[in-house]
Structure formats: structure tokens, C-alpha cells
Length: 196
Image (tube, rainbow, N blue to C red; front, side, top):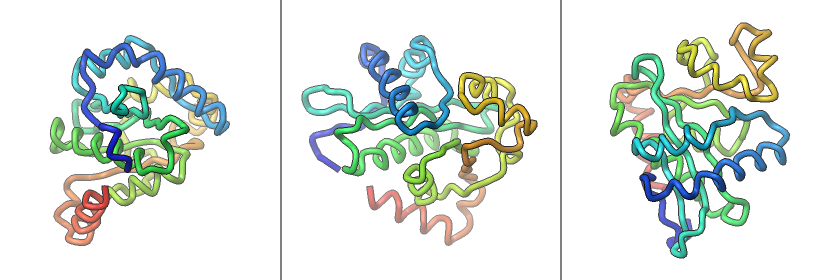
């Protein structure tokens, strides 16, 4: 990754970036032709205020990437969502660095929670797998209605609804901290963290 880009936990001082973050996420979804759960300016600002977001900025404070975390199911699940890297900063390993920092933040804030994500992107699936996630059925993810309500703004919501929340265009991926006891999983997580 380019050493001139810093990947940090977002705070109140980063709230002025929210509009560009949301715009970048929406444009990327349109280009890929995939659905996305839309979040409001207030929602993303709150993630920053709570210390539940990761932002990547250049030395000149130009926005380069973002991700946020949210707990569900009485804090038994944590989702890493909204991962985005600005086009001109792609191919540098920035998505992996952001995802790794979001993963570490999730483990710090919610050490016993299962960490999950929904994605249509092969690159994100690869990063998740390197961090110890595995592809799972939606039945293994949170049953928290508030999480699934966030999918209502996605263009593919009708698929999720028709399938009784069993499947959609996204792939569900899950990291279970109880599996850390398995040596092969722990070695994979350690290796992925060393690579970033």
C-alpha cells in the first residue's frame, strides 16, 4: 500500500467527508450494476462519532477509502459494511488495509461477536477469506430485523424478500471467533494480518 495514505478510526473531525463517502459508494454501485444498502448522512456521521468507522486519507487529507462497523443481535454479531476505495487509489492494497483495520476494530470493540458481511465483489470475498471469514448461508447471519431492513434500499431487495431472507445476489461471509481455536484458521488469520 502507498505509505502516503493513512488508515485510521474516524472521529468527529472526519464528518465533513460524509457526503463524498456516500457519493463514492453510490457511484461505485451504479458502475458495478450491483445493489447496495443506502445509508443516510446522519447514519454515517453517527458511526464516526461512535468510533465505529475507518477512513483512509492521503497526506493532503484527500478522501481515499472508507468502511464502518455496526453491531446486531444484542452485540452477538458485527457487520463490516460500506467498504469503498476511490478509483484512483485502487490496486494499491488499500481495500485490504481498510478491511483489516475494520476487522481489528470489530475484534477490539466486540471480542466475542461473530463478524459478518454481505458482498457481491470477488476482491472483498478474497480479503474476507484471508482474514478467516467463510462463505455461509444467510441463516447463519444475524436474524436482527433492523439489519435486514437496511437492505430495503437495495435494487435486489425483491430477491431477498421473495426468498424469505434465505438468499440474494450477495454472498454472506462470517468470521466466528470460536473457530480461532482451530490451528489452521488461526494461521490463516495471522498470515493475512502480516500481509497488510
